[in-house]
Image (tube, rainbow, N blue to C red; front, side):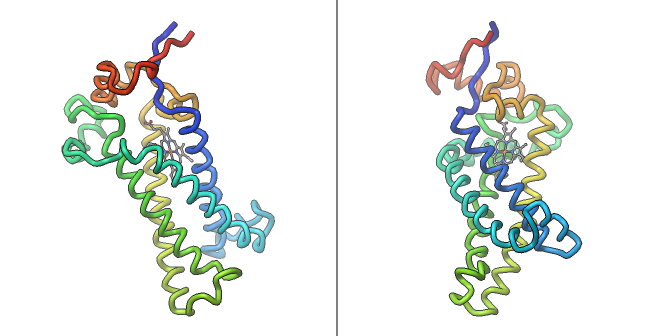
Length: 216
Ligand code: HEM
């Protein structure tokens, strides 16, 4: 029997992976429409016309799914003074020397920045996407407005892809984080190393008792 800490519920994980799958599909279909060099990617969706038809609908699912993550995670991503300190010690963290950085709560400042950047970028992508969704809203706005929307849409997409690459890199780089999002649990050692303040809060019973379970 080993003691583990529940980090993500089944609901958290299903919601996260729906978001991740939608995001990857949006990137692939979006890039295929962004530049002729990447048009070959449209083959994954059944050709150019299917790609153009399906991209906005997946975007709607992505927005709803990310709203689900916002509802579940906004509170633990609120910014605190410690987070600014943590950002200032980013060099130590990057050198695997977390002992010199302030103890981290449930999420570190990097995770919070990813969370809030996506909370801004996904709605911007959605709203500008609606403006350029020709089949339903083509008549609703003028051509100059649609041009501006297409530009903002592309810039927001590039920024979201950069944020996503940082997110996936960090998830793989901090060993055993991926297991937290696939199987839901982390070890007390992992929490001690990466989220010590969270472990103290758990140990003092602030988050309910059943968060710590025995596992065969
Ligand atoms: C497709 C590849 C992705 C992988 C491999 C991945 C992996 C992970 C992992 C391992 C965690 C847990 C981190 C921890 O507990 O320390 C996590 C959390 C999270 N991920 Fe992802 N993710 C992916 C895509 C996305 C996308 C596309 C979004 C948003 C658009 C996203 C948003 C989040 C959020 C909101 C959390 C919860 C932690 C927080 O509040 O910041 N993920 N992800």
